[in-house]
Length: 180
Ligand code: IMP
Ligand code: MG
Image (cartoon, rainbow, N blue to C red; front, side, top):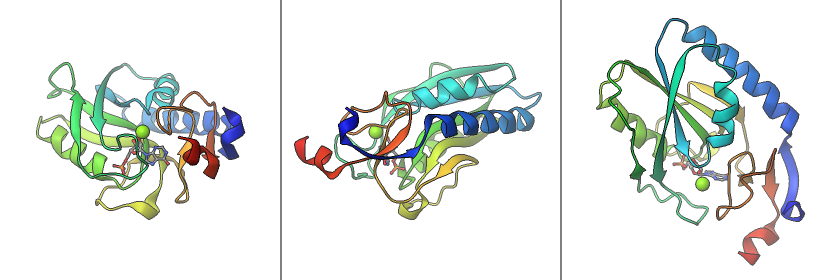
């Protein structure tokens, strides 16, 4: 698997350190508030699993699955809900956990959709932010790392459903796109 990685962009150690910092920041900001951490499947799973253990507050978590990319590396802008929340969110502060904000189209749609359900608030924590590619007007409230416009994999991020289990964030070699 790692033969197709060109280079490590963010190491396992750097990821771990940043997740601790984000958890501490969120803990301070949400003191006394009822939080629902909303993980976006499937990419946010490793990040969210690590992050929730650094948030030192009572919380609940749930997941949504949205389609945006299919198997290509280009965002279509078409968003569909494949899996929805299990309960009403009127009494909670929603903190969306994302793996990466790229064009922002997925997030813009999701935030509008959630706001219509009248939660106490909606904020976003993303592990990665690729701001150079932004098309929709959305800014994450908490961001792990700003990254350049390169396609990355690992720690939940995939290429054709692979590489999600790498413990670091890496850049794929050109060859990896060609064999798939
Ligand atoms: P957006 O709607 O363009 O912001 O797309 C966000 C989604 O696209 C993310 O949740 C990822 O699943 C996927 N994505 C965007 N950039 C990358 C990347 O560099 N590697 C892997 N997946 C990506
Ligand atoms: Mg993906």
